[in-house]
Length: 206
Image (spheres, rainbow, N blue to C red):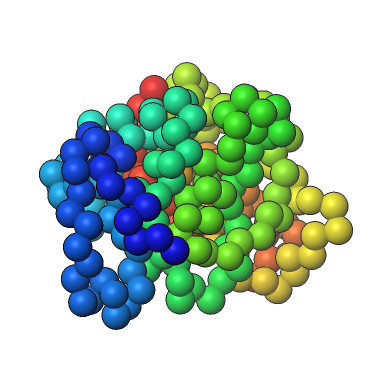
């Protein structure tokens, strides 16, 4: 890998210090892609953690801007921003890593699967077990509408989940509707346990 692959911050375009300290070299950590000033604007989610759903960051203003650029402006390079944090949180998990899928029509519209790309950049192996059966998104719905959403997933054909321990991965946790629907399908399919990991934890927004 070219350790100088990114010379300017992907968020503010400020020059990055290309020197690698010995810890980064020894542990083969990922090269930095954002500056310290941008990095410090993200707020770690250190409290209110649930063993069933773990999130890394709160949905503050900096994260809102990041997510808009990454998901809706199709800036796939931004998948690199949190790869180190995702890697160190998932590398030793014993569960099968399962990203929340996109509907094929939404995938065409977005041009890439944002959850898959986060995992790819963090070098975390994953497998798709679910299919999304509706093009509806949770954005724009009220909390009540989200909570009453009909099932949005189904198991992929030929998938066997009986007895498996599964970790669902999504970009943002808001009301938990998406995670609950995915978990229900997997548990009904025979999964032993289903937990979740998200990059962001949000209060109800949109």
